[in-house]
Length: 152
Image 1 (cartoon, rainbow, N blue to C red):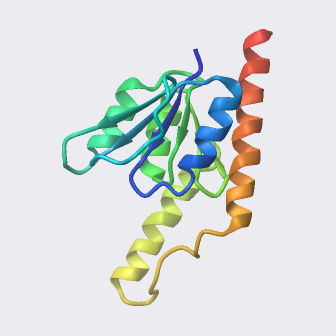
Image 2: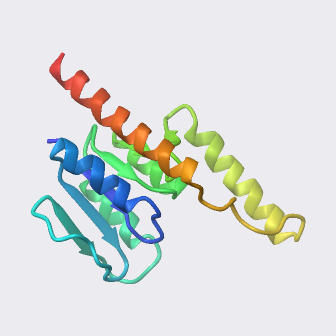
Image 3: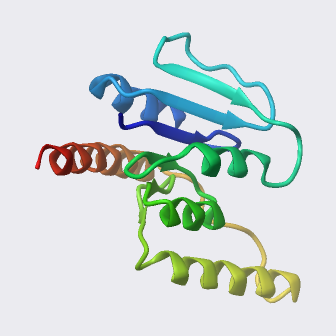
């Protein structure tokens, strides 16, 4: 069964994910390093992992299967999930694919080096209502595409 995993720490689109998952009656697991409030629903589960670098990422990678959906802004996690044939959607609605994740990793590394050298300051632009809308649209389309492919 199609399952949605949410990299819960600092995820700005949890509510949007719940909305789409509820519409399609999909199970959702939110994975985080600390307790957070999630709606009480039979289809929604919170997993709190040990504190530590990549603990939540490792848990998701250990449980995700082909054609599950992972919601994350973490590019290395996206790459690991794609290796397991999962679908991955970034917070702004940009799907990570085998074709674009390498460029995203390289860009991430370049920006990190520029920040370390003091050439570039700051992080990503603020999250906007347009990002939220695009995320909803892309998640819905991703679920529909997986369901169509499974019927064939």
